[in-house]
Amino acid sequence: QVQLVESGGGLVQAGGSLRLSCAASGRTFSSYTMAWFRQGPGKEREFVAVIMWNGRTYDGDSVKGRFTISRDNAKNTVYLQMNSLKPEDTARYYCAALLSNSWYVPRTDDEYAYWGQGTQVTVSS
Image (tube, rainbow, N blue to C red; front, side, top):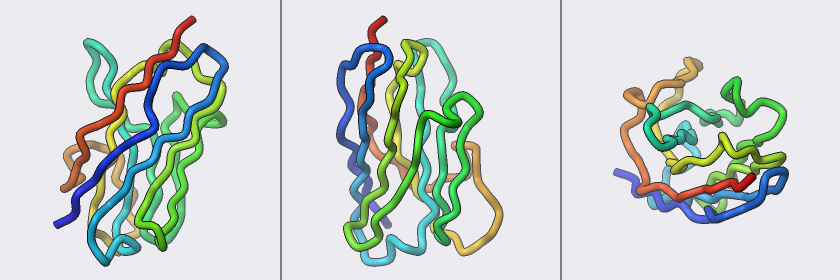
């Protein structure tokens, strides 16, 4: 079992930056594939980015070139650096975890076993 706590959300102007953090409990963090999803008002949950247990990363099409996912296994934390923010990035951002040593890249929310409560990001125009 792993517990996830997100932080770092807030209100930012378009073109600005934010860094989200997700702190995980447990002693096997390095064995987890970690992802960020988001859900905007009236929208379905959307894949943002994933960082695999082996460090490989994959981004969703809507954030490529603007967002960067990273992890610090010593701190049991995964990050999402968000640059060049747009109003359409406004959403609640969720951290998710999957215990895996597979090379398969999970990009849908139903593939993840553990979720945080989310952190709100609002981008004003």
